[in-house]
Image (cartoon, rainbow, N blue to C red; front, side, top):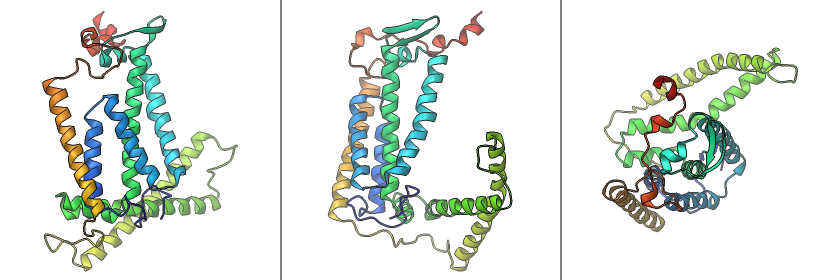
Length: 306
């Protein structure tokens, strides 16, 4: 099993690996819809734990997953929250509906609700990340394509998705080969004496031959598919899709239950009886929540009001 790029290209031995492509795609779609539909921490934490348990059960190579998570955490969570604090320290008031200030200096201040807001958003993003990792680790490109096709997507679109997944390691290997050959010709890409700007500039130079190599492979694949009569029929079969097992039936029942619960939650708690604020907060009662115009709390909007 090759987990170098997180994506699997051969079926694995665990319970989740042995499910059909349709079961995996359906579970991933419903899980994603459930995570997107709410900012309630009481729902997000169980979904996060389920996805983390799925990842752990497949015994993956944790190194690429950890690197991707750290990159996402630094670029999206850490830097994003700092910029949010600078632009709109009242994000907690806007989304939670109240403000209990813990620290203040000039126009900058930190509230309990702001910390709660960034915590809930972090849990939501982590749950989404874990869901994607679980799906990527459990599903081969062929299973992904067959599952999408069984969900109603045209098989030509599904084939494009499968080919896109399969070209990731090829593109990475081409980049490494081109980089090594260019370095042998004197192109400076490493070393302490090479400035960061020069490294970026020389790295961009590598993209030109890599793009031409990729286009050449695309042409070869297209010609091979044409010669084999691809696209002649309206339907096709998938060698990766096997008969549903007992495990598939159990997971499909649980997926339907999760879908029904998600629909019930959206209808009941987003339309019929919604919480007064966007985020549920354990120390606030409904009558304590304030309704604030988001644009009024952005500091640069004051410039337009002068």
